[in-house]
Image 1 (tube, helix red, strand yellow):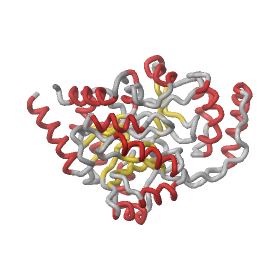
Image 2: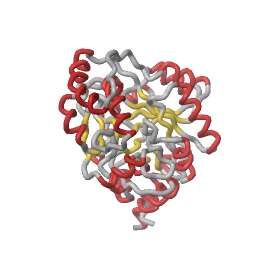
Image 3: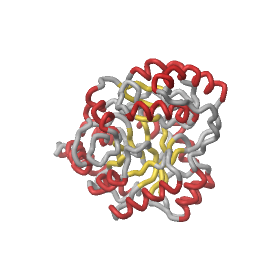
Image 4: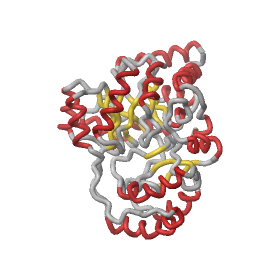
Length: 356
């Protein structure tokens, strides 16, 4: 037990030496776009000694700035902001075919599906400009990488950068782009898989095997993500080579989470998660429900087009708390998610990982 404790303490020190940030506890609060990540959740993770993250995906640059301001008022510790890297436009014909398949669903919910879906870069350029003008401690990327020039510009203003990777090849590309650390996302993770191309099939190599595979191609510090719902899982990820772990689903039921009441309840009520493109066109792990079963096999690899296409359906289902039609992102350890203050959840999980 003493040897195990010493090993984990050394890994915690490694996180600091690698300048992931000044982490007393090597736990990162995952950026969960769509409302689950809140400034209050960021501050709570920070109070536990970890690193909280805002999710800028789906927000405008102005809305991102408002959330950053709220975080700065509530914590003096470092924090991060996650950006979605924009993708090339998808095939409109494939989106049109999926729209036709969804029309009966739209009629059932009495909503209109968008007929025209224009280009959407998630306000990428404006967000980068804002983060250069008013830097934050850490920026992470999902769905790809910035250009080398964009990464160099953020580095020049003192921002540390983390890339989400799902394969060794993506890890090599991230290192070449100038990232400071890598978030290694295993297939167990809830929400969107961070594949760098929309059309890429999501990898199936378990996190504990993916970590050493990525370590073999890079010297960058690794952050483990996916299915880390208890202390033993966290300890195993650290032993497998991670300098820190990232928790998302484990915090969805926390007091500070922005997840809906229906989503929180479904984490313990629905038994199974699956990876699907049904809701957004990108592979994402969520609680299996009727919508996924009905439309998952037909959803094209078209993001964010499918995300916009299904938005009226998802909004209607959420308003009625219909878990058969909601997108309920969750990792494989969803049943371990607990209620209470996020600070206490992170503290308890780290204590369990250390064997205290």
